[in-house]
Image (cartoon, rainbow, N blue to C red):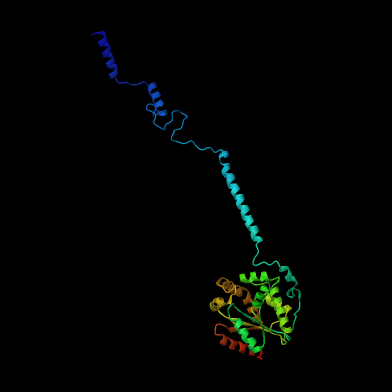
Length: 321
């Protein structure tokens, strides 16, 4: 054989002979393979290119630096501060918000007889007063007109006196009364008591020598009753016309078509009903406890109601003229 052929044969035997690595080489290979299992394959997308580089598909953790959080905290604190200021401002306005009608002439009330007098102006022996109470539309005015005709009483309507006063030129209480009536609330009792006293004086001086008075729609509150009896004259009794709200509402709406009164509308009527129940019924209850109430069913016709009124008056010793 030629040297070239001999060399090729030796090379082929070497290639075909099984390769058994030495123990040292095998251990090194295992160590290398354990630490880098995919070292021999190509790097896939997203895999690190170096031992300290994270995969490209994993985002780096956000910084916890307070410099990126303080703007949010500042906005929240500012919002809380402004909200608190707004709430405090609303509370302050509510504290000074007037409840109900206000009159710039209220200080003049302190000079009226209802606030300065400590004893009645008249004795019950000289002046007879019958209070007439009932809900709005109970028929008080109609019955009072019959009583005046048969018994000689002077009819005084607290509501009419207030309405006249509100339209009287130069009245210091006119605007205040107008506001109270429109809202369906009660005029300060000092004003009402004084107007009644003035009307009674004028009636007595004008020929009402017996001093017989029907006061319609009064007292609307207990303090009015107490003030009147303390400073003007104690009442004989209270004539109370008992009527349901449904019947009274129907009567008032019908009357409102021609009366021209500002309070004969549904909104004012509802307010007047509520005020009557809350403020006037305690007057009726207290007078009834004292045995000073004559109660009449006012849901029937005017003539039927008046027959009961006459019977009740006879029982109380009140005789027609």
